[in-house]
Structure formats: structure tokens, C-alpha cells
Image 1 (cartoon, rainbow, N blue to C red):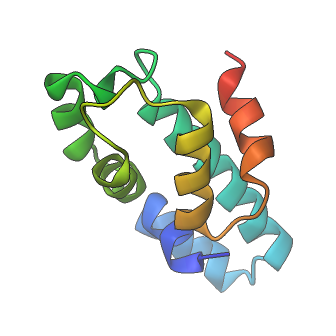
Image 2: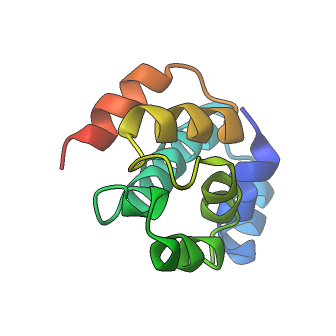
Length: 110
């Protein structure tokens, strides 16, 4: 798990609180999985239209989430709509998680 990427998605006060109370590896892992789902859903808002619609991509490239910005910059533009599979693969890479197929199934269900 990429703990720095998970921490970057959380408010600083939350990170401080979790750290000061000795949050377990399981807690951080659960937060990483939740962050991956939330980021994936944000990237796929509008049915993945940011893959070919520049205005939608620009919104994501300026999103408050560092993960959304980073992954949006990596996903292909101008080829097709983004898919749950491609988005899940990059989200799992970003957060250092395994099982992108499972995340893709979660992202595919609305």
C-alpha cells in the first residue's frame, strides 16, 4: 500500500489523529480501498466521458484530489471513454493495492 498516497487524500487533521492514535495497518488498508473506490467513481463520472471530452478532462485535472489529478493525466485521451477496468488498474497502482479486477467490478456497479 502507498501510505503517502492514502494520506494525501485525507484532511491533514484526520491523518494527524489517525497517526497519533496508532491506526493499524488494517485501518490504513481499508482507507486505501475506500479512496480507490471514491477516486475511481469520480474519474468515471459522466460514463468515462473525460476520455474523449476535453472539458470533462480539464475538470478532473483540477480536482482537489491528488489521486484524481494524477490518474486523469495517465488515462488515455481521445481514444475512447474511460472504462472501469483501465481506471481500476491505475487506481490500484496509485494506491499500491492488489486486485484491480475486483475494484473494476465495484466501479462498474452504480
